[in-house]
Image (cartoon, rainbow, N blue to C red):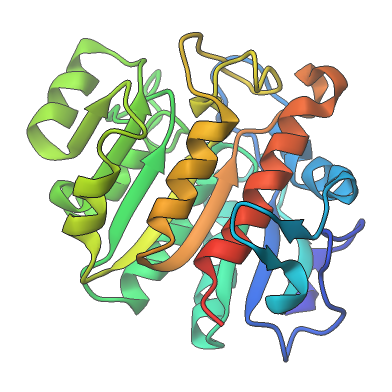
Length: 287
């Protein structure tokens, strides 16, 4: 597992050995297709480094990180600028984790890194559902002629697993065509996070679920450190509540993407991201 990775610190509470871990954190430091501000390649490392500010105990779930054995593999050594090879490496790493019966927690990086992780989960689990927290629809067919983009990732996921299996929360930005596509093809919840949760839990209760979180689902007041901030968003408290509700489901994979430390005043975005990763570990990883 270590051959394709490099390490520069580890997430709070991680164990030192892969074999006994139930979950594995790994980073995909890629921002090759970002459309506004680059820098998300530094997100995984920053999320790890600020995690030390957190307690290992979560009062939201009354659980402690010592109850979840997880390993931090470090970041994939992606070939800079090579999108196709990078996506293939992420896919292979995620596939290996599923084969080893590990729960994958992927840190981005731009949102495109979610696609190969979703693909690997789709191949391993039947009837996969994907729940997206995001400000942007990410439903374009291409962005400026490029089909592989952080702006196309959920469109590609919908084409892979079927739009009826995709649940989009928090969306408040996109083209008219994206909104039309979402309303016709996915479970599209414009500018909503909390309200649809009961419906989503009911619809997904029988199937494996993959959760992808773009940090820009949060309002820029809570998460300025991202490449494409979108005003009018949600609070960290909203997502913490959402995570607790979704913890009732059979979650089989999780990623958190689009943290861009260069624009992060006082590290508040990175700390919010680290807290969400802690809550995902405690709420989604079944022990």
